[in-house]
Structures are given as structure tokens and as C-alpha cells.
Image 1 (cartoon, rainbow, N blue to C red):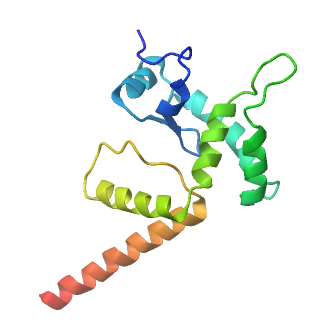
Image 2: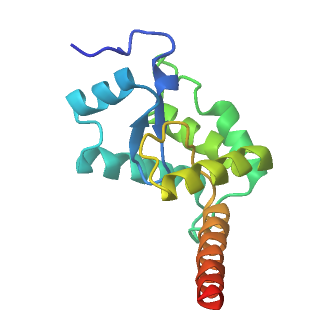
Length: 156
């Protein structure tokens, strides 16, 4: 039996999606659902990824401006004439919300990422950020490692 069901009003808040179609639970029950239902299988990841890419990138594969993402976010959960949501709308909503995070959220992410680099494996709070922010993070991390390498050589 799965602990979190689609019949629960808050079920979608327990799942975090990255912009590549991956999914992670925000607690043990959500992670158990992911494992039981095999929600991280390659087939589902590819389908979610295709839906996400169609929503957040333009024809040149550039990330849409924040204003366009906000407009899309305002309508993504609307239903059609038959009362149905579009496929993966909750996934796209989750990803766009992650891309629109504030600088404070990004600084929290940096702290969590640094903890992960030090071996913290139970990283449940992480949300996605734009590729530009992730590039900055990777560059900052590489610079920090390079600086530490120089310091250890000087200290020897």
C-alpha cells in the first residue's frame, strides 16, 4: 500500500521534480511511494522531461524569461472543458516554481549543496534552480576547491 495517495489534497506537495524529469520525495512516505510505484523509471523521466522542456524553453532552447514563466504558471493548473488537467501540469508547475526562486532561496540551496558535498546524503529540501544559477554554483565550488588546493601547498 502506498502511504501518500492521489486522493489526498496535499499529495503533490510531497514530491519535488527537477527540470530533467527526476522526482524526489520530501519525506519517507513520499520516497516510499516513488520506490513502490517506480516513479523514477527512465520512461517516466523522459516523458516528464519532454513536457518540461516544451514548457520552459523557447525554440532556440533558451530558458523563457521570468515574466513568461510567471504567466504560464498562472494558467498551468487550469482544467480544460472536460475538467481535466494537462499531462504533467503539476510537474511543470513544480519546476517553474523552482526556477523562480528568490536569491534567499538560492543562498539556502548553496548551504545545502555544500552540506551534500561534505557527505550529507539525506537532502530532502533541495529545489531546482536555473541553469545559470547552477553554473554559478559549480564555478564557485571549483574556485573554492582550487583555492583550498593552493592553501594546502603553501602550508606544506
